[in-house]
Length: 75
Image (tube, rainbow, N blue to C red; front, top):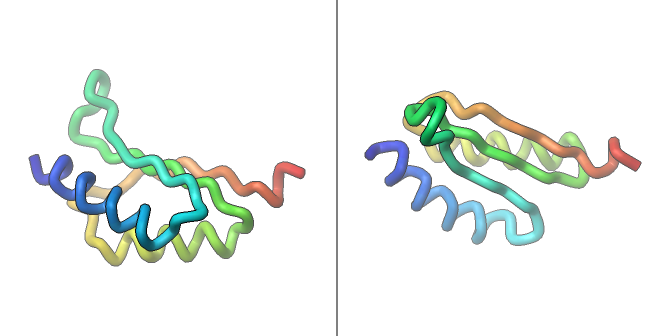
């Protein structure tokens, strides 16, 4: 339940802190219910690091598994 409570609060914070970025937060309930997966779409690697640092400052209850997509590197 700690992961789920953290997710609810973190999703709201992410929406407020990074309104122009796509940030997806969730868990894999079938394979590993005690995991935390965070997907981030950012324009640059620096922007991604800023988002990750901010999320880390919210003290996730377990180590997140980050999935990152950097737009500038895909052009």
